[in-house]
Length: 196
View (cartoon, rainbow, N blue to C red):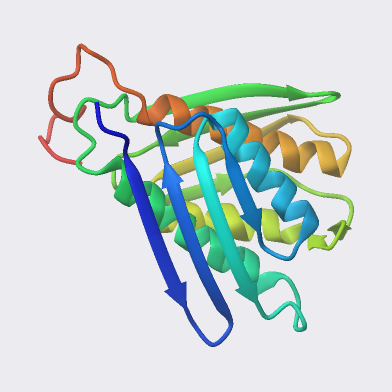
């Protein structure tokens, strides 16, 4: 079976972004956003989802990290949607309860074509490294709407802010890997409507 690959480029006055995503990869990543902790999160997403991911971002970090992270979410969502293609044969739904030391986080995904984002994660620090913690929400919100997916997080056991964010990125990776995986029993799309 051919690899499902998408490459998306988005250039604005605030950011220049190129993302190449292979949903059928092995977890290889080349990430450069200019924000160390964000790079760490995207590397974890690629590794634990077994996606091959290239991310190159030139953002207006002299302003702050907002545009760089939000716009990367927009482009990653587009890449997920394009790579998933017509969604024939995939499971569509994915979920994961993931432990990260003292933290326990649940992530659930539906690639049904309707965007929605909800999370109850509350961070107690303003920043992790050079990444504002409020940008975790902005990133995943952008991904969910750009990819047209339902994306839900439940922070079942909160704790260290680094662990909470990392748990969310890794749980998202595992849930997405499940949602885009093929099931031999599904011959078309998993919907009574006949399309997603």
